[in-house]
Length: 82
Image (tube, rainbow, N blue to C red):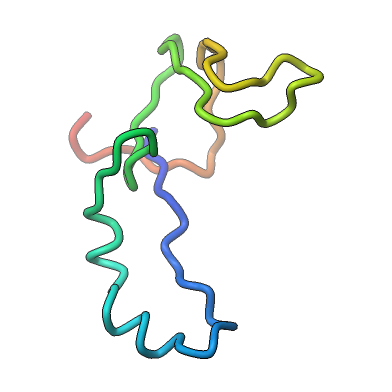
């Protein structure tokens, strides 16, 4: 299954039009930054993943927690490369 990041710019800022013209969605989706997931993420059941953010420390969902994908939601799209 393929999953994609949210790719919009906050339109409540005073310089929204300027930011949108400087950083179009197509450009934002090509950025690869160490420590952040890419725009396009492909997952399959059984694959190990590492949590990069402290989502819920009281439940053990902390930075660095190792998890295994057990199911995928219908919200993903099939990859054309599979």
